[in-house]
Length: 514
Image 1 (cartoon, one colour):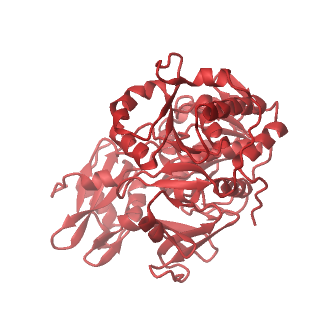
Image 2: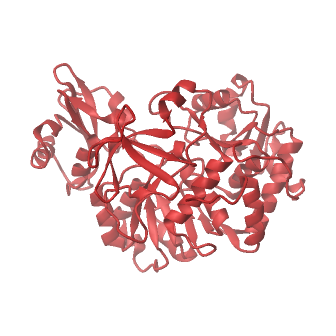
Image 3: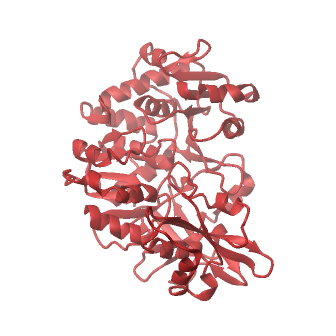
């Protein structure tokens, strides 16, 4: 069972700031900020929001890169009882306009470098009343973040916030239509953090986490919240830098990090950056957000001697639902077992549990499951059924209770009545010594309904033909799974967290000969 010992996030922040007062919370390049000082900044910004007219339940968006100020903004919004709405910094103005209007955000905290994007759409966002700018020279018509923090009191706030009040609204990537706003409550947040800490076996006040993934995603955001709750020192970076990675690990005596498969793949291309570095402090690295090919997994552990634990989660489940045991039996290629306080079952379309070893939809239940999508009753009815979160991921459970993702339900290829899971072919292609990256999708076919197409990135200095790829597949797969089309490209399209955007590949004009 999971015990949540705070009523809301504000209460947790206040209590932990007192408990870990003079301990360093954020190490952001040359800036070191203690728990007390950080919480004081958060209180100051929260008071400034109240002075600006922000009320409990209002949605306030944040459009900024990783920095202490951005994190202060998020925590400050939550402390007022308002709802923090991260904006993906890679989104274009028209996407941001959709988010602001769909959420009906009343204010946005924005980094100066993104102001020009906002100006393009500001007139089309009638709900947006306040703009608070992070930067040295904010526009005169904007509220200055620095001034707001400097001129406000740092006294604790006293606003009635219940566990079921909304704390965050994260917009999904929109791979199957317009992005949807995922509402996460204070209870969702605290429950997820408690389960993650227990599942990873984190030692209170002893860990050092390296965070370089963007905090506008649930992974990094809740890593920061968990860090505050657990007395973790966070080495926060603006983004991933392969050249400095191992130097940062050594300098801060990092004990763990969370990354996506692309990060591990990039580090494998430049193993010399780890030479001579003392990385003995590292306990493990987490891999999530997208499945990592088994071959990449093994090569990384052999090259760097660092244990990787693969986990699984989604925004609708407040960051994480399963993890391979840090202490205990790991199964490479598996997403592990449910985190404490959560249940996972494999169900069919009618909600019945399928037999062990058979494939069905992976479904999650627990206090971490979202309140729902904002103003999307039909989507809620489809996704939240009988207390279970239907993830859309196809998986199976083995005889020891470990779960294995087969593929996305909507990415399954149906060729002549046969179900084909692209992830199986992806994993095989990654094991080819000349292939750096690969992605398999289904393409329309008049006779078979769909055919298999493989997009392949060849390792630098290597050459490969489409027939060599098909022959390799024929030697390892059933004939109906062998790609009919093979296309060589320079790089796979990825989003900011390193997940391959297969939707973009499927939407490309198909070349009949590949």
